[in-house]
Length: 402
Image (cartoon, rainbow, N blue to C red; front, side):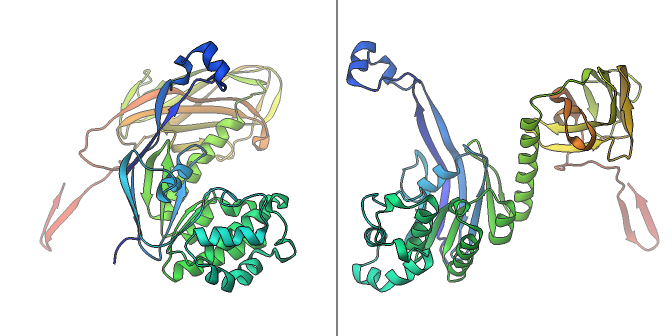
């Protein structure tokens, strides 16, 4: 069986222009052509590869600006890649831009015919399916009104209804379900599942991690236009959710009350010496000096260790250890002792924070401000390096310990 969709090392490049680029002929004449030229080029997509079989669903995850919509535009043929190639087999149904295929001055009825014929149906086929399209969209009272009078949700319902009634072999859905009500979302998901069961290949952009896990056969995580992860949806969706939780936490903690401030953070090795590098499995102590400007009850101290990409490998806090901490005005110190740090080799950062009770206020938070290196000696590809011992038993009478 052939793949329904294949993408091989796809790349898409765009130009970036001056913010004060001339908009009129007069401005161009006054300022010259210099500002008309692009100041730089950037890659919206780079080295993106995957394949989708008929009857499979691929979920695409990524934060805003990661390249998700650009990828769907390339797959659907709206834009051409600058690198690599794309192959799509069969009739396409695409929901890329809400109501982009609709003319605002035409009625809903007229737009149904235009859109469905453009998608590959004959006029007679559209006539046979028209009632089913209107019934699915739940727009019978408004179908003869110009679509400029439709709400965003009405446009979405009509566009989705047209797309799924063209019998697509491949369906591209760009976050459309986020603008509908819950009942209609469930209806759309049910119909997508039906299409998938009938052999339609589906590519779905969604920020809903549970939706990706429940519906998709594989997942693709895009970050800055490149593939961060591709494969089994549960694990990738969980990684993406953890990454977004870290980003959301950082955005929430950009303003601090400063009732309690972090003054200094020091990293010590097992001998009490300052460290910038340890071996995997070594001990570490994280020492934090603070100053409290007011009395504070139920204070929470937090500490985590993350890599250069922001992935957290170790995360702990005093609340999780059932410590109740009250601070009087003045200076103080806390220490976190880690008996061993079984991390693979690489660059890491210590992140520290001080919070009010129930995490209601961030007094102070410092993210990736304290770097250190882990030296890696074993020739192994692993995320952890716990103490280990191999026992080889060649026969019942002989034991050899390695």
